[in-house]
Image (tube, rainbow, N blue to C red; front, side, top):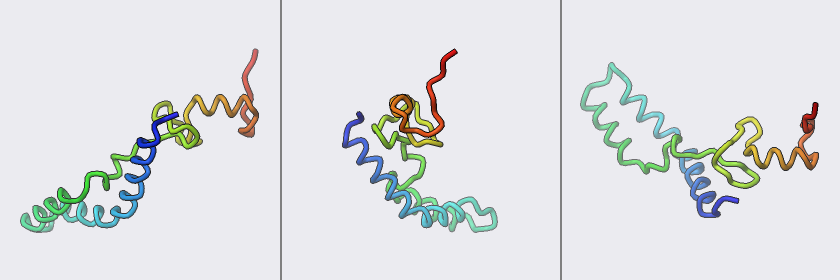
Length: 101
């Protein structure tokens, strides 16, 4: 089980990134616009730099929803390999059976 503080930090980042997504997207569009003046682009890049770092989508870490484990994460199932195996062995995941040959 992951530290509760790490899980909470990640959740705060997720909420902040969701709330600031529109503002970041508009500023990034101005920065990447080749038709805008250099002063506008520079001002937009300064505003983007002033925004909190945790508002960036890239700072969010994929974590298992069952255990909070950050590694070996399956995006489709939103859980780690360890939790997947345990729940599969208990029969809690439909269609998943232990292989034997």
